[in-house]
Length: 227
Image (cartoon, rainbow, N blue to C red; front, side, top):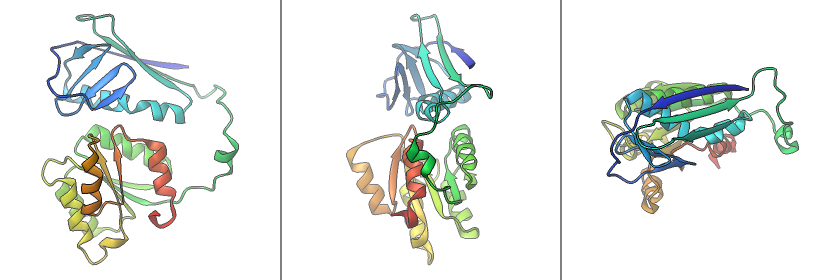
């Protein structure tokens, strides 16, 4: 088994509620802070992106028969994140009959719209490994330009973009002559009850919350004609 460790230092607690939880790891996307076992960490941008990916990792670890954990001995003692993955020579558990019986997934043209470049790269790699043709952009303006010059089947769009919010991006895409054929999936760091209704009104077909649930995303992509 391969083990990966990362150690980070703590700071004062965040003043915005945590929106991502993975076991003892809490990630506050609004305050750009995180805590492990109650110890709050000070993070550089790339470190925070790493923790966002670690918070989303449990679902990804299941896909690769691995696991992820986090631990801290207390304030001032840092935190340890452990990712355990089977090596190439390890024997993975057999696939279930239902999984083995599935037909090969369709190859789709997917546009990822995510301002966090590290997170976008993670989504890009995971979807590409599933056989899809993937393009990534980091602003709403770039998304509108990309869909205006290239044909996509699916747009995976973060709602909290730096220039144009995701709802506006969806409305503008839907307003185009060929806009109805696109499958639009919203991605949000929040889970308020009104968010899904707003996303539907803007033209999104579905909404997924961060950390991105890969199993649910895969099921959505495999539905014929986005049903």
